[in-house]
Image (cartoon, rainbow, N blue to C red; front, side, top):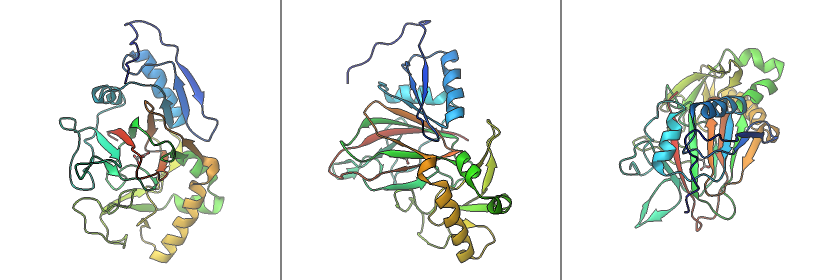
Length: 290
Ligand code: SIN
């Protein structure tokens, strides 16, 4: 891939922040993420807090550039273990590969080519990442779009009869399945959310940086509202999820190679469309500690 010219130190970057027009997301233009200074990063960070998801097109990031840029948001997590129990990218434990590509009979990444359902990254942990950065190296001609939805909007959209109740509830976030439906390495599968591995988090949270209230849902599969009989919990969760994932609260991203998308994992959820398993899709992801 040809490298774009780097800006000289001190050379101004004409940062342009263009909201997507949807309920969340902004396109940030005019930056080469390999060579930004503190003031440019401060503007990016503010836009990210404001819009929950930011997109940078036409980037030329080696893994070390992706790691360096991601580190500006905070300390990085090590990538989760791949579905087959491997870690990937030798010497780069921060990089998680999302890919359907199989080389010499071994998957190079996770999540395959199927749909990845709506989720928050790693919410089954007590301290999930605050942000994730996903960089596209190879994308299929069609399919594999990633959609984002706003959990601020989900809170705002809750009807009055649900708001009071929602603030008293905690959700059990399941650690059995990943968003592609694969069982996590080392876990014995179960479909009883009450006994499944996972963590309880409040259903309604206040964002520690923006101070705005939002829902925190994680994943629908194997979720449970603490203390409620399963059928009541399921009925209530189904109602809340329908509100939270309405089209009007979402934004769809059609990938090109060289796109970097950074989302606020606290107040936005994401999902991915299925794509042709014969096509190649290779993405590298980092996660910033919560
Ligand atoms: C992810 O869930 O982190 C991956 C999303 C995608 O592959 O677009």
